[in-house]
Image (cartoon, rainbow, N blue to C red; front, top):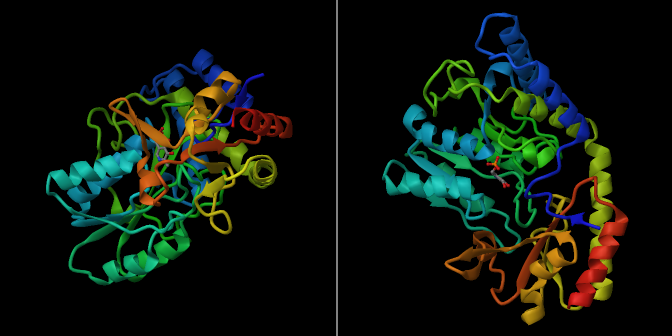
Length: 374
Ligand code: PLP
């Protein structure tokens, strides 16, 4: 038996998504830029996909562009907002994904823009009062970049509140919605979001394809130069099969959102109940009460040599989960998110992340194995 509990990292491709993609790869191979029938067929697949994405986030079709990943989408927004929109200050948080934080490092090392990192509390929530105070200082044209759901600890930001604060202060808002897309409703107009990123492989689509939403009134120029693909916004022959898979996966995720949510919540609750019953001294990282994504459960285990070996021993037992640390120069260190929330560095963190494909038996088996290992 092999159990996959690393769905925040990536998800298996849905069988219907695979069917759609195989059909495109086999039959619809035309270059979407060609004007003959083969090309027109591929073009219409892309445009149909764009409609699905736009409808999902309540954007207009002209505001959605396909990219190679959410990493590309986030780089594009942050770097080009400075160049094209005259952004002079970016306000972000210490728990963003590395594709945001490392982009900000690069931006600030070039001296192009001031970067302000907000404080977060022990649950990973940003300090909204600090954001409010910062935004009331309007000397510099500002972009706020805050993720919707944190990939390591599951804490969710109140994007309506952030969007309203941005609106009141005439500030632009970029939101990394990679972990929430297809799992939670997202409405760019209601939440006053100007830029947003998504990635197919987090919602049972293929890897290597994502999208960016760019609000019409704040258009950027291309990040990648070349041909006129994506209406001149993103050069390079489109990943037609990937884009078709992204749209199909999103459609399936959105139409099953409630039922998936319920199933994942049940698995999470069972996992927590069993852990509390069987293993002493565990606690959970991130918000557990109000604003959290059900599919991410970050568990902090008491210190000790057995805990240090947990991820490896789980793997040997046939269970794939992820550790809350990063290996740097051969030394395991707490991840930037764990450091930001003040997680004690002697405790071991494991992120278990669920999908609707997981079962109760898998959860029971995993907790049983954890008990044996500890
Ligand atoms: N942002 C978040 C929150 C993520 O979890 C990830 C992937 O782990 C990314 C961005 C990057 O997405 P991609 O794999 O499409 O580059």
